[in-house]
Length: 295
Image (tube, rainbow, N blue to C red):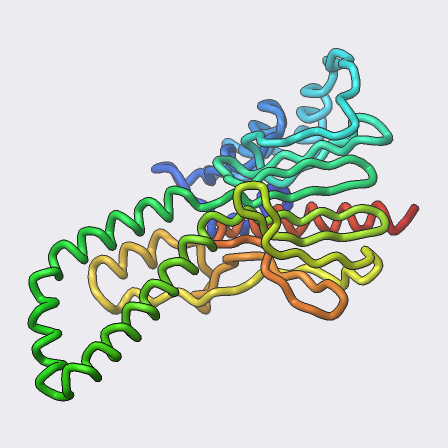
């Protein structure tokens, strides 16, 4: 039962979660449950059998005792709440009009929700853009002495006019790819679902560059995007990356979220995200759609 609870709380099989030196499953950073409940589950899955509860009756008594002290009442939150907490897939209904979601730890996206609206915002990849520009600058700096050699080689193969045409074509293609990559990193992706309409849009500096609007009734489903990762057979670096990756037996991992609007398939995030974030986003979207459709 403990392993099942861990899977339900984290969305990850206990066999895929890290362990400490005593073979205890480490999952506290992936859930927002109370310390009492966390200790109770940890005792259920203790590697040493003697340290576990000796019977189901004792385990049930322990969990009952941990909830004897009532929690203080608090005022209900505002109808629309912005969430950026450090816990995994879990939601709590504080009032009939508000649902609070707690994203996984260290996630970059933002989620806000009420009983009638769910908004997911994927921020621009500023650090990725800066890092890419730095790497590109270093590559160009080291490769600059080679450019005259490339020009002489092209000029030797064709006449000077064709040489200029080829170089111009290469530069235009390079600049186009560079501008496209830069704009994609600066994009903010927003998915907004209401009872009547769903909007999926991309914006740069607050100005919408692309969007699609459809009735929410045409929201046909959501599922993970799987990505294959390399096996550990290509060297020390590949071996380390493979070992650190959260993958399945077939070396695939959840990397993004697919969803269908009016028969068209879209990708939610503008870059790969963690499997725990994929699981959490899918659960949030499915739960919200279920709530508004049963009204």
